[in-house]
Amino acid sequence: MWPWLMILAGTLLIIGALVARHRMMRDYRAQLQSDRVASRTTKAQVASSPPPALDGPAPDAPAIAATGPMPVVSVMAASPSAASAPAALPGPTPEAPAASAPAVPTPAGSTPTGSTPAAPGPPPPAVPVPAFARAAQTPIATTRREVKAARAAGQPVVTGPPPLFADLPVGHRLTTAPTVRAGAQDVPLQDWLRYYAEGNAWSGVIQSISDRVTGDPLLQPYFGGMDRTTLQRHVTSTVMMLTGEGVTVGAVRRLADAHLRHVQSGGHPVTEAVWNRMAATLGNALREHAAPEAAILSLNATVSPLRSVIVSRDGA
Image (cartoon, rainbow, N blue to C red; front, side):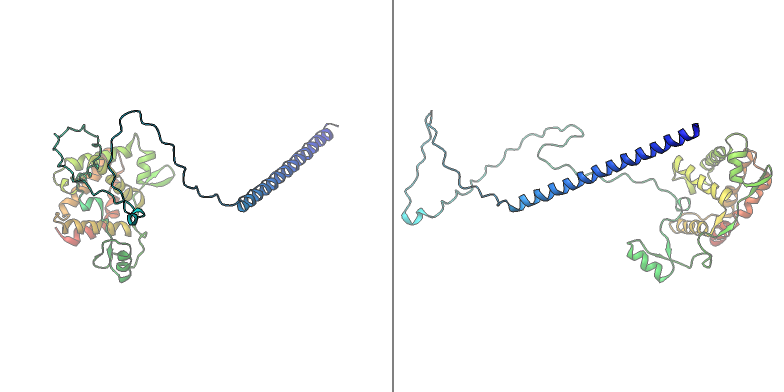
């Protein structure tokens, strides 16, 4: 008995909902139709109404009795021929030279009344960032199509030799990141530092590398123009590439072009000594946070494409 009652109640609820929906739709259509009729009626009334007449000349106001002595103005009698001619305006009165007023100090941050605000001064010079550290911002155009596209976009055109690994796409991975055994699977070194190492190993590695670069006189010329935040951001992106993503064709081209611009602007090239010091800095920072030695040694193979285009290209 109860199942039938529940079925009957559900059926009644569905029917009631359908009826309510039908009524709502009916009211909505009726309201929409009335709005359309009202809109058409308003438009018809506006179209049929005549345009408003222009205002005529205002009647002369009655003269106001003067309560005091009025100045007497002498007016010459006009000839009949000049009666209809408009009265000539008086000529300009020569201005007396303005007396020089003493300068009034203006509070800082306010603009004097009646004067245009002073033009803002030149912005402070930006902190110089070595080209090798920030990578190249202007791509090198090597084909006629790239030169034409750069000129059409209003970008500076820098021509140079064909790009490295010209037969490979930008996203092609030349080397992979080192892996570490974690449980039953091998994970990239970056994931091991983030999720499997003790403590906050990933942040510790970034902090250690930044401290070592800042205090090393051999590496300072390549990163000395960076503030602390920019340096840590650069170190983070580089370590993420080497320990998590591997080295791609695009990364090799960017860093090689940056190194070339750094040298062309008067900077010192990356020699074997500088490269070895940077590699030792990375390795020691990883050892401080108990990274496996096998993974640290595998980084030599990971960075080999960068070493070949940066160190061997310009020599020691």
